[in-house]
Amino acid sequence: MPNNDTMSGTLGVPVVALGDVHKSFGPVHALSGATLTVHAGECIGLVGHNGAGKSTLVNVINGRLEPTSGDLAFAGETPGQPPKGAQRAARAGVRSVFQELSLCPNLTVAENLRIPYRTMPRWGWRALARKTVRAALDEVFPDHGITARTLVGDLPLAERQMVEIAIAFSRRDSDARLVILDEPTSSLDAAIALQLLTHIRRFCDSGGAVIFISHMLGEVFGVASRIVVMKDGRITEDRPTKGFTRATLVDAMGHVASAATRTTSRDFGAEVLRLPNGLAARRGEVVGLAGLAGHGQAEVLADFFFSRSSTWHARRKPHVAFVAGDRSRDGVLPLWSILRNLGLMTLREHSSRGMVDHAQERAIGDTWRERIKIRTDDMTNPILSLSGGNQQKVLFARALASSAPIVVMDDPMRGVDVGTKKEVYRMIRAEAEQGRTFLWYSTETDEILECDRVFVFRNGAVSAELTGDAITEENMLRASFEMQEAAE
Image 1 (cartoon, rainbow, N blue to C red):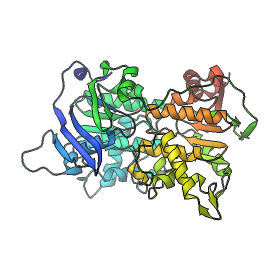
Image 2: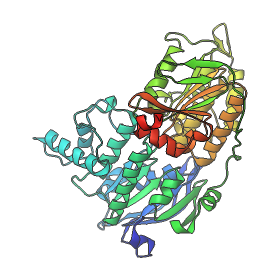
Image 3: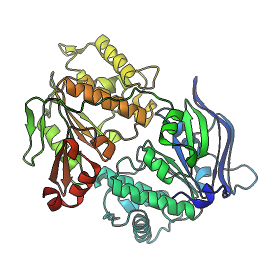
């Protein structure tokens, strides 16, 4: 349950207060008149569609951005000229876990803790860092299995996310008073996400505060004592969680996509793939890969994708397209424009004698900007000018714009809002009905329930194959934990 004092109306002292804060990037108003106070002991659920201004708001709080105008005050600041930016926020006990993870992959888990732990002693710091990060991981994620000496780059995405979260909550030179979590469960399976939500409640009960950004509304309702809704750079709603239902919260966020429709029964084409582990798919089928994170699903998809892709030149008619969940590592080309990122899969399809047909490239970009609602006024803007969710939309458009008959999706909905998810579900279903096959790994049960057939993985092997009415959360959980029982 959320913090009882907060729910009953007794708030702790303000940790941070914003008064009529504006943030502009040239003519673009990313934040308009934001007024918000975060109190000790409360967890604020910050929701809104991609591009609503959530990241701008929290980046003003954590010091990454300076407000164009307005007031920003932290508790405990002494009179006089305070430090600016991130240093000011850090002194006030503000810590952040970003949607795009900020760990250094070439450093160990313990060495990554050393970076924010600025007063760590010079002698014997490695032992202290290992002890501190182990304690934080044990507290937030019991039975995590992560060693402090492991290079972060060698960890799977879910474990990297766990490390960054643990570092944010760790006890070090100053106490954490406000922890900002931006889509913190996007790569975590349900069991690990539950551990995090439990720790957030403990942290707030002990007097800490959390800003929790998530498109997973069930988690928001489960952990937040108060919900703040943003739309078009403005705070449009701010009230206790009990004042919302899921339906009224979605209404407050605003609808950006039509409701998805699903065909409950239809015929599929011939089998287009069968792997040695038993994973199979037919033409026009949406096949889900389920199970706890880290049990081999991503590896199976990667092996299949590379087996059907050239290692040295692009095919004019690609056999398979790929939608990455870890977009910063596997998807986005950060120095390129939105248009060039989107058109990467179709360069060979729409080129002649080695020359790109730029008119066709622009036409594809304009079509998919409208179809999937990419929030930009100019497709030639840098890809990093987009929010994380809109970057993910570009990766979907890249795959769906190609003629590849098979699309591989590796947990692709990270940071995508609920309205866009529904629109993507509709597009996937429409593409499948035209004969395109999808292999879809997801850590979200609601997404797997959209599939025609589901293969549940456990310890790197397929533990169950589910179809029709057997595709339920209960059956997937049973197969995830008890392979033998699921086979009976």
